[in-house]
Image (tube, rainbow, N blue to C red; front, side):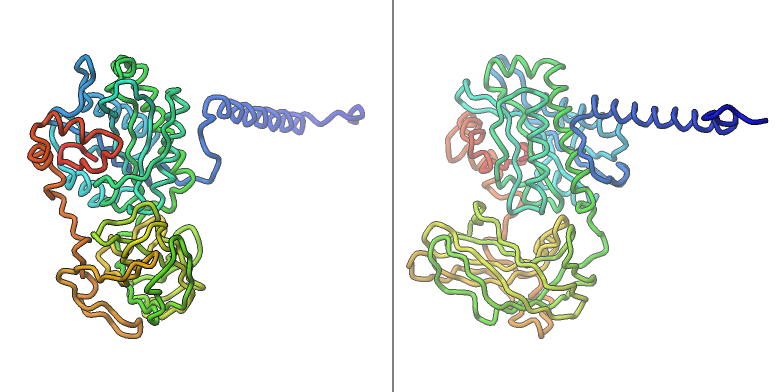
Length: 438
């Protein structure tokens, strides 16, 4: 039997109708997601269960900052962190809390929880406070001396918190908080609002505003993992070692801000091949210290890429590029390899190769170095075991340093209240006490 022109047999007509329905469903789902999840980044993503997020509610135990009417920062921090945790777990991510009750946790313990569990990211959650009650806004910190990709994590979180809360953005800032400089994964510290501002304290009392902050942090973490997630899964069986040779070409004097390139060679003493391709390539970089041994955090080391993959035991020659600080003085440059998205080699126990130089015509002065074993002078020579782990005086930063305690501040200022004010201002990275989580 023939069919009218343009009409399909019944079985083919049913198949075509089914295809149309499936196509319509796919389009509808896509439209739904675009309407209700506009914050999601559109990149290929690993399963959420592949990632472990460590959430660090700041403070705990002793009373820290309080608002004008008595709202305690430690209470707000924990409540927001629990809301973030519930969202992450609901989305399939694995989460560990550094504390889930009002108990004190030292900075060293917080860092150890993240490092020991090989976390993908670390996020410390805080509420801000200063003596000026008119100050308001939200800000997020990373550390240029911490693990790679910290800036991107902080930037994603800051963006989403601002959008969700409507708070004034105080930007993404570089701060040498202990929990940001000693964790081996991308890390950020978020300051939701100023509890010291009466209007913001009133907002922070409400579930609605805490939910907005939590949602922003959650979205920021997810967006970061969607974009950079593959770079945050750190191999647990890698050893990080390198031997350096600058052929004595590192300049002894530079002009402020001057950039210079020179031949360099490195031997791969690790147990894995260094990749020269993103996103987890291995690059040469460096850290800068001033004459007092303080890291110059305003200038993160330039990256000098490897020209090819480097197998264990191989030597690679390439061009290194460094840039001098913009201020005059005596400085030490410590060459360090970086496994992008994973860790600096020095964070994994490897030694660094140091050279001193002056900037701005200042006469060079060698820094005081304690207990330094000889470092490898050339990549063709295996370093001694001691040279892999040598440390200079300015590398020694014990978690329980006097500078990290309220006791030190109390002795210096004369009373605890003064410490609360002094330690909670814009330069709070000097606080670093055992109950602050910073």
